[in-house]
Amino acid sequence: STPTKKNVAVALYFVGSVGGYREVSAAMGMSRSYVMEITTEVVRVLRDVTPFVVAFPRDQNGWNAVEAGFAARHGYPG
Image (cartoon, rainbow, N blue to C red; front, side, top):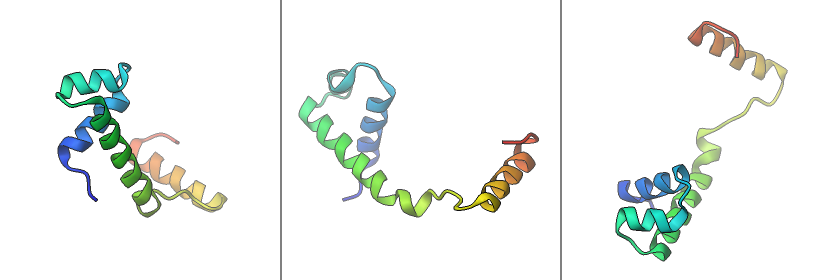
């Protein structure tokens, strides 16, 4: 299933905090087990879509193109 905005917020809070599931559950008013379930689901969805949105160059020419694009966009080499 597709995570809702609140579920994504829960997962982002979790990965951005040092307090773990307990902190997130208190902040979001949810049980720790539900926070764990939500976080697992969001990570699973991200893992499943990664091959479609993240691609790494397969050869030196590809890496050179990435570096040139970065330099053109930001004004300095990658």
